[in-house]
Length: 295
Image (cartoon, rainbow, N blue to C red; front, top):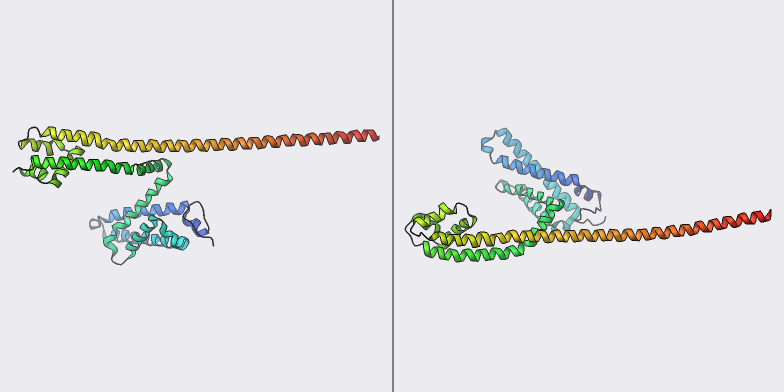
């Protein structure tokens, strides 16, 4: 038997074709979602009737066994090639933990199988394009995060020195040490209750010009640096769109060239047919002429 591949488009056996078929994948995806819903309902098992809890646990266990059969079938088909996929590793570990004795404490891991729904990112073209653009933007995002972290650190040191030496418990909780200052500045950067929960408390503690310090931080961190994330993602999406457009244009050019080649071949074929028809007519005319001469 030919060796199986992880390519969903090619099949080397009926079993491989079955487990890679659309209906099988849709069935597993539906069971993943159902399993996640059941696990969510079971978080309220103290308020549910005992019979319903028993039924839900039975459904959960049955779905886990189906997942185990799925893993077994894939191991039979792919063998060691099965472990070349990260998702296969994830499924293997999660199902193994679910089947292990006393694994109730890890049952939440089974809900993580719902992450396999992310396969939609490879099926829907637009979602795939956005995902690829985000992945390509990650290196640039890392640089922006580093700049933002450095900026927050500098402002946190300044805020701790300026506002940390106080007897006000609320301000001390906000800026009493470097980690607290960094966390408070992160809240200011997100602009979540920054005025009354942070700035106003510092002003009331005897720092009337504190608002100027926080406003400059907001302008630099929120309006400048954070907007770079949006610009980076938009640029990545635009680059991905340009790449997709170029690929489409190349496909169109190839189709046009192929059509022109086919047209040339058809013209040659028509020309050859005309020549053959002309030869046949000439042969028929010669035969008719020879027949009349014989008479």
